[in-house]
Image (tube, rainbow, N blue to C red):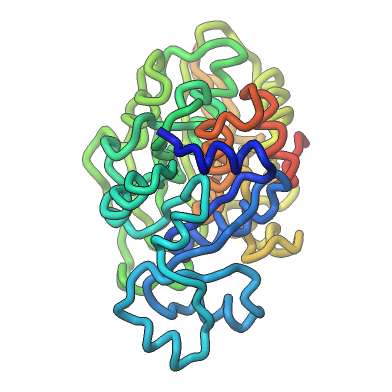
Length: 352
């Protein structure tokens, strides 16, 4: 359970948050927390002077940096990168940790969180058993309220659930079938190699199975195809609603959702690259976009079923749900509605 220290901190003022892992997700989690006016980012932790850490230093160290391991301390000293302490020092100073360390490292960090009575949020790459609950801000917020350890869904699953939950709240959803056109690596990654091929995974994809974990009343299945691109996934969804729904009704619901952006091919949003470029033109840091996008022209009926396509900006899409998870675990705002409202407000998301 959360310690008295942490409970007192929450009551006295801003919730104190730490981030473990300052990589693709960790950087964005830190920025997301820094935007929340009722949260304080105490610091970030990493193991080595990566490019992300070097950039943090060159920007003037807007966030305090802690060492997740002592093995590379000499390298930090050599580069003159100031260090505020160890990961344990960070953990002792916060109410909750956002763990964005590489897959499997979160499980190794958990005993440290338990030792100091600190709650933690884990990312989609960790195994489900690490957490008390599998969490999504819109679809099952109440399952996370007061829990010590929550696990978020993957980027694809997070965005997919937003869309399916939106329809489900409108008319109910019996089942969905999805095809994921998955980017093979993040921009700047080299470890996947250079390819000129598509690769099909065995069905059903874990995203469909994860959706059913969050929304057990929906029958879901899916296929995943890896593609040699880096900016965003595209998912086609065939949903069977419990009640008939028109294209116009569904688009109206999507447009009211702060985390869904309805776009049109006609306006030049031709695919994933168009959305990434648009985010950069908006001035979004790193070209990030928190919202998924639904292409208006892809919404079609097939009998009772309705089909559509969405874009998943994989680097940033899970950040809002992480903020939701903090709010749920610490029961900050008293209700799901208020919690989501504040997350959306501070991240600058609104219905369009």
